[in-house]
Length: 153
Image 1: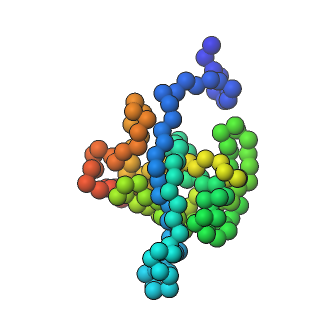
Image 2: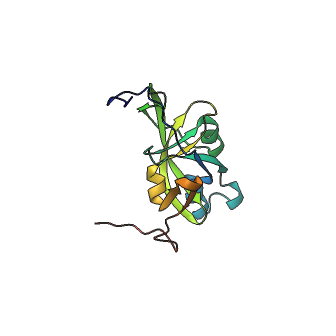
């Protein structure tokens, strides 16, 4: 049976999920360090496994990661979760994201408790990264192996 448009109960068989180790840094701590107000070793960072989902627009972290990074409260926004429920969650900024030698600055939704973090399209594009689905792997864009390249057209 072919699912109807809007039928959210269909089963989708996938090749598997992609995970990668990502480092997050409190951007404001870096600014304070540059101004001589915070020692380098006091910059708050967190490194861990993220589920990579180019179909999600933004990054999502959990409350524990927000706390470890010492990030300030943000604004409340409505989001649609994987189970299709709508929930109001916080969006915060001031996050530096790093994968290998690629970095970008972005904001993130804050999900409850210890929900697994997710890396979406905005930070993936910001670092010029691509998912290799056949290998469940995150890599630098093979078209730009020496560094991210962006079109401003």
